[in-house]
Image (cartoon, rainbow, N blue to C red; front, side, top):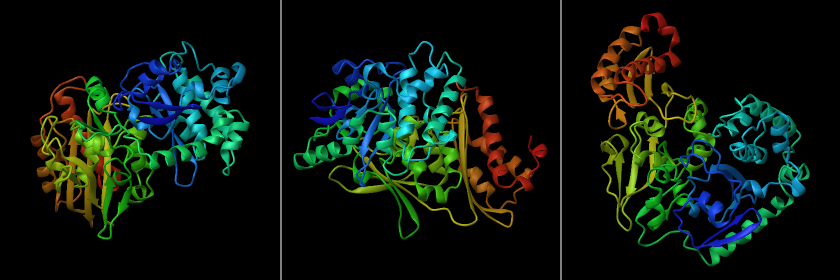
Length: 478
């Protein structure tokens, strides 16, 4: 039995934990404001807010695409649809009014998704800026307005949120009608709900006969939604021991397998270690998907162009897996893939954590990605580079690449070639020649094989130009 709040209503349901939140909202609760669009997390028409009780007693709301949210992941949370934020007697909330005022709705199909994403932006505990406002709607697609009207609406809303206090913002938000007054009671209601669940634990969709491990759902509910709905699932999204990012005494950084891409982006430790991490992570999907998708899920999906996989390959990451009731073992990420969509771990082995050695002074890390759209798109080619440099010479290197072979690749020969070489245009040209022998791209919807070879060459140059522009003249590289 799953227990959660849907808007103001307490929900108890025995619907399959692997079914989608979208279908439950529309077909079981008959709340039709949440739209069915792509069912792949791309369009944002099904966006809802998911509120999670925090240790300090507040509720943190995140936007998520309900078409890919497993119903079991709603357990113990507050789920908000557009019906749950609508004001009484047909009045508009400030978010809705801003969209109307700036002409941000035409056919209206996508409008609900924009409203929910911007409402989530209003509920954020972070300061509202032009950048965070646009980031809030990076997972929403509109085919009518050309976006400029929606950008103006977002800017107007950001101005209004400038008056939001940092202390007790929910009181101000309800007073200004951004959300109804019942939101102020949700922390106490979620605490009571979680106390009940703790004293009489629900299954939360777990089963001793679980046939499918399910995290954020962003892969499996695209690939095999019917299968996931029908089989017992083991939910790992909210397992405390599988969340979190820490640095051990030996300097290794450890991520729980259920750490989300957004957890990664927001981590103070990760931002300290990788100053450009925010820029890298903006290239990974969209805000709602980053709120849902887990690092381990990206790894075990085994996509040849998994963005997080490529980044962590360059860090020489290790994956710890465990058989239920059995011992754990470590696998180097570069050894996790034996072929296209094929893993060296056994099907019953579950990823527990990911670890890597923290970069040291003199180390450089960079991530690059080329795709048809800048955001919310699959890479044509992506690449990451880790370098240890002294006096203009490469001491060690690890170059990874996706989209140029059947698996995510660590280009071992190219990495070895770079070691000991001075950073010059001639070195990079020679390194590219080695890299071309390590890849085997194919022509597909994301580009021809020749185009992908060219992209890898350009991304190799881009890595070095990011950190050593004074040593490299672009004219000598093209």
